Image 1 (cartoon, rainbow, N blue to C red):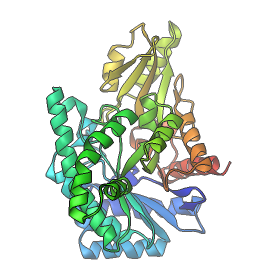
Image 2 (tube, rainbow, N blue to C red; image 1 turned 45 degrees about the vertical axis):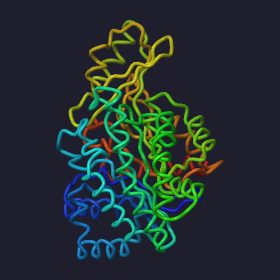
Image 3 (cartoon, rainbow, N blue to C red; image 1 turned 180 degrees about the vertical axis):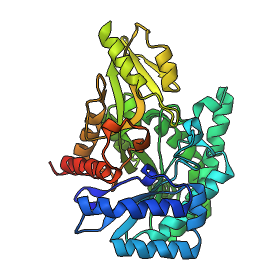
Image 4 (tube, helix red, strand yellow; image 1 turned 90 degrees about the horizontal axis):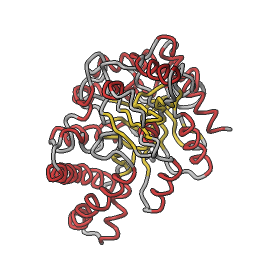
Length: 402
């Protein structure tokens, strides 16, 4: 929905359905109910997630036209999409395969271009659109620094193919659309430093001569074109797990003249590890969130402030007695409307700070709630799906309006 501070929605990766008919059925079931609760008298924006299979099916003209008719009937619109998970995301073991295929693959390129074609067909006139995507690849898939450099270089060159299509679309009168890179723990890009280093050392270094040659523009113009079409997806949970101060990150982005295409509003689990019974209680509560579908990276902070990375929650639990560790933060998206999870809390305060910054000094047009873990959360943490989504949206609206 349009607010004074940007378009607000939730990501439909919350809903199961890997084929388009199945996912559309979920949208038809839940979106009208959520809209009636939070946006009954104004258009409701949708953050659409399509698997590769669903994108192929929705690309067909009859399906796309039927969806456009439904959007009009429901007074809804699509302004952002989630192009990170390519394959199955519900009722299957996802874990590190959420990164597959990565940006070294032609399949990732073709899938992303297809998503942008769909988005271009759905965007309301005059509105910019964005698609979030994976942070190039997964760090644990590479073994050496040389291999890592090759992966980053190949991924960047492949991303330029998408960039070229976005520029051509915009220069031919189509909408301005941007690819929003989403750093996350253990991604090839996992924090603001790695994102900014990649942007200047790889993306601009290879992209500027590429765009300047393709479109006969100056190098300065090429830089601005790239900054308009390749932006950051700021997932608040991911940056909080990495212990990054959101205001520092956003000021750093501003300093370097880099744009944020989308904020994904999500909260991570955190727990302070004391001693004795308190520590046991915290660890016991983390065990309740050890499920087998998604990757739940943990970054621990030691007493000397150094960080310890665990690829998944089981590896952290195996090191639970480490006396040097004083805090855990886990990549487990929990409802944003609460902070109390037994002996654990959440990083919701980071969301409040990001939204306050957006109100005072706007830095994006797209705000998307992304608590995709409802199916694996304990029943005590949720209501019916539409009520849970509406409750999150109302909490965010309160932050924006306070």
